[in-house]
Length: 421
Image (cartoon, rainbow, N blue to C red; front, side, top):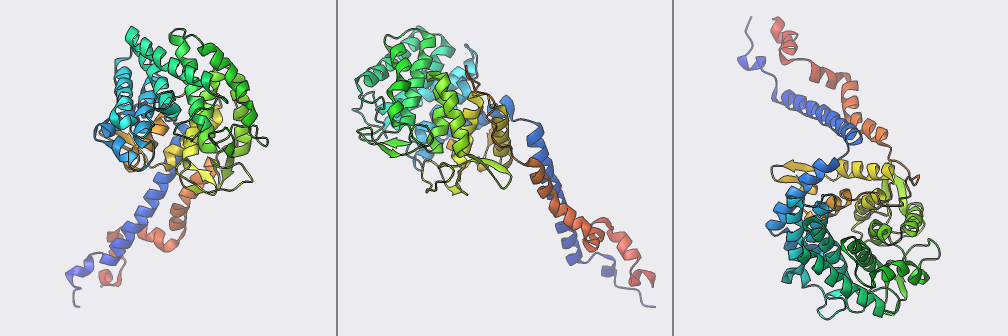
């Protein structure tokens, strides 16, 4: 009897490739299911935010702010200010590392690159967008440092915003000539409110206390919420949208806790939905359709990913732990986190400004007078866990692929006709 060729004892190449592919499907399926279970069981926490900050510091030092400016109108500014606030807000006074990050960010806002997109002659300086966010960060720098010079800087900035609001007719200031976004003024008034913790600034209490009533006339009749955009005369151009609404709701508790709690519940009713087992925030109220833009990003079934990330901060400020946990877990699952030696980045670090928004949202804490649970829908994570297991279940349910995976090459050769001869 003729012996078979020596190569017959080796697994055929096609069989080896099939075995690797089947094993890969099973392993990836199990890893996906494990990932779903992990993000549900283990919240991101301060350790993850600290890893994000390490990445953001490194990326900004390498010019990420300038890169983001080429993609977004305030890309440089947001990348720096949100990184500074994400480091500073949860930190205790005297925290040297948080102060270093926050002061670096504040210096960047005042640099030529930080002021370039904004009007030079506006009141307050560079427009309310620049002035409001800059004051919010300056407050944190002064709180962390305790230095008289930093407190004086806060008082100066707060005085400029106070004066501009007192002189304005309707309580909403321009960010650019002829362009008014209410969310920019909300940030500025909230920063005024926060500045009071460092010492009194004459007239600030009155501006903050009267702002809610002063701006009530432009609220949307259907939702009761502040609009997205006004014209220079104070007329509404765009009604409530989630990309600005979620941002405002992260600051409104500093101005008027009662009004903020009521607005938050209206926001959840009008914008928070569950689609395909996931919870998201629509850019436009339920029942209304619209196009995505630079504020909202691309819309998926009407849901804005950027608004959903920022809403994590709003939910946290209102003590809505269930919705905050849901949005945080989904971000951790689907935003493609990549831990690396220089920190943790999302979406492979291609958009550091998005990482900065997420880190800032995670740095928020519950406000005084928070409304608590809103009754928003939760995400159906057990369904996603089962969906992740489907590929492995299908592979293992088919006898042929199961044998391919579980039968060793040696056993297969021992039972072959060539081995029996």
